[in-house]
Image (cartoon, rainbow, N blue to C red; front, side):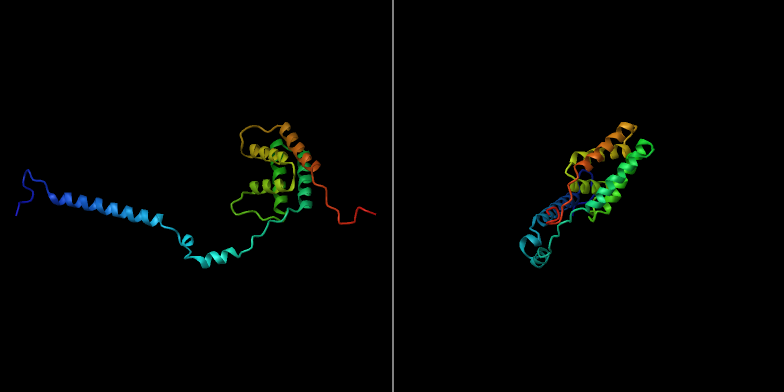
Length: 181
């Protein structure tokens, strides 16, 4: 039996342990790649009960926003801009009023949607003039989160955008036969 630790000999058991560790790591990596690359249960049809149950769920279309509430919100935002306020406060208060109006529009905010995104979506759906909605959003975000001073020109731009929304507001639909006599 060779003596261990003799000067000039290398312990072979260290080499064997290193080879075993590398082999185990290689096998583990191959198993992981196989596991990650295999088809899912849904793709193989093994989960067909769940797929059948979820395919029967009706998809509800989102209702149109309540136009009277939105019209009132636009008019209130215009009143806020006409009050004697600091320009930054006027723009922020006008947008927050629009957010409150959007919340009252009859549409539910999505789980991952911020109040600002929700308001932009509702206004974009209700009004044909997307440019005015984008202008209002840009002014609000720059006022709320920017470091530039807000001027009377910014308030005038917000007022012009709101007035453009009122001007391009779709005419209310009349009931059948109401206009003809």
